[in-house]
Image (cartoon, rainbow, N blue to C red; front, side):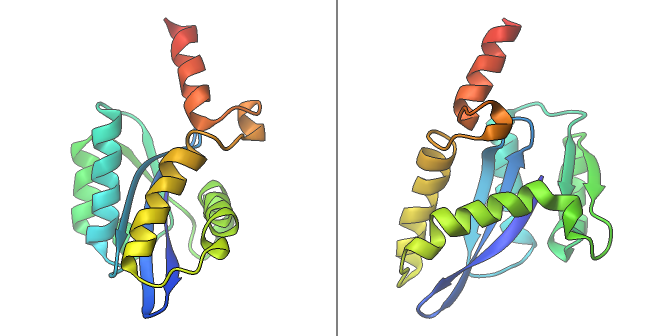
Length: 159
């Protein structure tokens, strides 16, 4: 699943696009930009695809934003043989897990810091996503494991 949010800095906003694995709740792709455009979401998607390797048959869910519905993004999904799912028009509940993640990000990171510039955000957000959220934050939906622990436990159970 995928979504975009904004992060306020002293001179305006930065935009963060994330791709989450719904099964493990892990952030598998993300990108920051001063522009909310298709390049932002494509970068996050490409990071996710690089992280996961073959994902044929997986479902990619997002809202109906132009960044996700544009030709280049859809082509990238189709090339990876990913099934496309989009929320119903005007229904934020269809992307509730991504919206919940964004609330967590804002409450546990963004609202706690005074980002003065782009460099502040580029230093803090990757740390939160990779070191805190994926490695340390417990999720009730995962039996109070972190996304990383949950994935490792699932891999061990299959082996």
